[in-house]
Image (cartoon, rainbow, N blue to C red; front, top):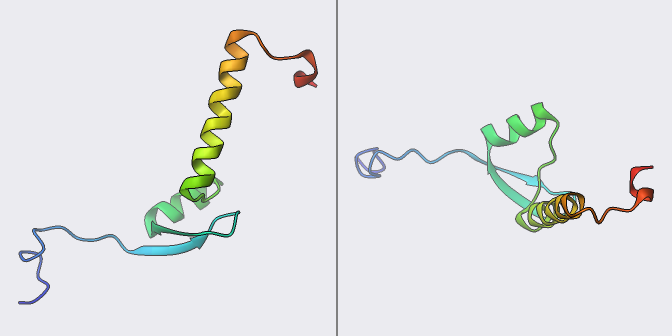
Length: 75
């Protein structure tokens, strides 16, 4: 049988969906991840946007715990 599970080593590839990131890039994700992110109200991000967001969050945490935040940041 061509394309049987035995020939593929028992691996079943997930169904991929294409979704636009807020920056306009097309993101390939499996459909279960897309549905989960939508149910949780999370944005679907490309790798660049995700890395940028995480970097900003780390910088904010660093500034917070090092006491470098200004009082204006709280308002």
